[in-house]
Image 1: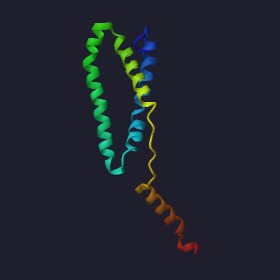
Image 2 (image 1 turned 120 degrees about the vertical axis):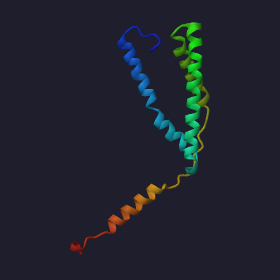
Image 3 (image 1 turned 180 degrees about the horizontal axis):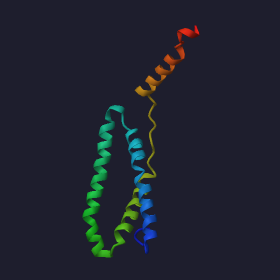
Image 4 (image 1 turned 90 degrees about the horizontal axis):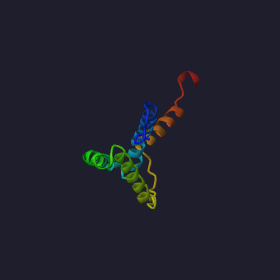
Length: 125
């Protein structure tokens, strides 16, 4: 969209789509972190942030060369190609389900619910 934009309206729509794509970061971190044990969640988030930053740095370094070689829009089309390749590589992957363990906040919520149900004010006795 942005690569072929001919007006400000088209650029605005392209930026809106880019903003929606950027909004997937938090769900991505949550899903990726859920694949690790609870005590390694920080490590998982750091790994994801490192790979994302490495991609940004390498894309920034390649952008000038791509612009010189194929014009302004080549970088956008290259990004679409890399994203499509990533989707093709991820599609055959199967998620191994892990047993669900109760989180501490769930245990606290259950305890709090039980405490609230068992509480009876002295004026109601």
